Length: 385
Image (cartoon, rainbow, N blue to C red; front, side, top):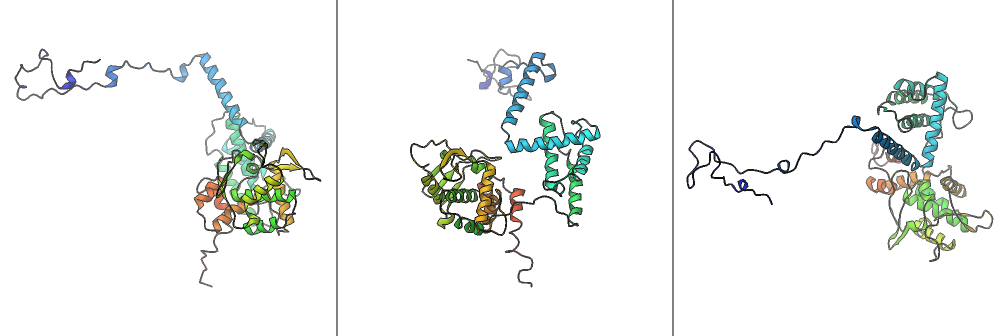
């Protein structure tokens, strides 16, 4: 145990400058202060770690191996559609670099701007059209991300800024012409469209499954893959409805709460439970790890063990639109867009809507969904004309 005599405010009588026993400090001098013991006074100084430049060859090789494993692990857990998109982006970049006799690692503001100019004159997804601006913008992102991850290029975060400014200028000029590029955003499947579509669905197992998919996706404002990969174990019953565990998500896994709907036809809780019962998936002997929504035999509608792909979820929504004879063609993203805007129109808080759909608060994408519907309640011409 440390002896801290000085810490008690006492001084060794034999120490130099100590007052005589029973006396006081000489006039004009400062009384001795208690000594303070700090950790640095008690512990030996730590041995400094060597800087990275002094690592041994063996350590550098081990770190390089860990870095490669980390990169591969990150790539393995990236969604397949994202990886496919980046691969397509890099393929186009490789063709462009070959034409200009540039190495693919020559990712600079100038080369990316030239890339935009070249892509602007490339064919689009549909015969007779040219590449959409949104596709060109994504190509830029794919090239920069691949350069950083696969080739470990230290690219500045503004490396594509000039190319994007050029692209925006081209879009402004495009709007002055009759030319149309791209398919545009998915049309919103609003709640009134949902009601029209689900009430027109056939009264069989196929119709019931498709109604359950549409109403649940709408209520969750979910992406197609979030619905496709749902398992039976991901549903937790609750007295007010059910809690859905969206484990597989492009950005934000979450557990939204789905309430009973005001109308039985569009109530996701009642419709999903009806599907589970009619499909024989509500028994205690059913594997909870099985898919919530299953493939059906094309003729007999028998339920298989296989789940649905995200693309099939989109086909289900499109077919519902056909059944309901909607005046537009809904796609797999339509319930997500329409569910968010219908919720805003009903007066729900934007933060609540964002949390339900996995958007960050104030998301530009989510706010873009509201642009068409907003501006009518609070209009500059209210009471004027």
